[in-house]
Image (cartoon, rainbow, N blue to C red):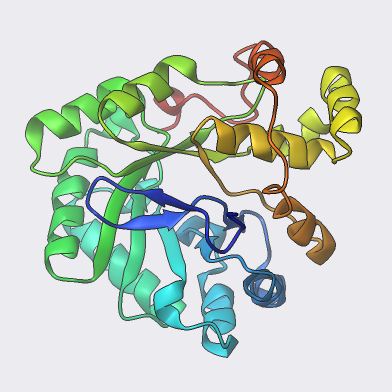
Length: 276
């Protein structure tokens, strides 16, 4: 049976990533290394960071200290809007590689499209070059609407392998996921627990008790059963372990429907079109 180490999601470029990983948003650089080291020891094989998080060096320290072979770990990072543009993106990738102490990135992502700046196409061309040069294995995006993805696909040789977006039971993103699926783009959820707000949802509390799991475990399982890659974040080593214990149960179809019905198009973050 799959577990956090073996559950994999294929990418359209022929690579694959772990279906469940650790996100490290808002984890201080000094605190991130022991958390990442603990997660790797608990079986996690996907670590998701970003230049904006200002903790790539701490993540790199954990990668250098672990006994887990480099080739078994998927390291994903992203560059911020200030680094949009062809040359800026190339430089940002080099800086992230230096920060992380790595020779290549497994997954490199555009953090936000910032459509009013009209630079994400230039950045995508730089991403394609980074991949051609072997500095990046797979390239994708975050927080893109379907029209942003379509513009890339119409003007580029490569389709993004992934779109990482805010997604949780209050923001199910059904139309966007359907678009992804039609183009074999992986959907990955950030804020999969609505920054913890979803944990008090009464129907989820009741349903989790029925399965004998935590609400977090229930919601992470819901993501996985929808075919969504998920990167929950926690500052607690125990919760990091608990979040990975989601492969020993499955949700009944009517329970999946119930969770889907909680959608209210509620964002904990901003709409991508509003961030520039």
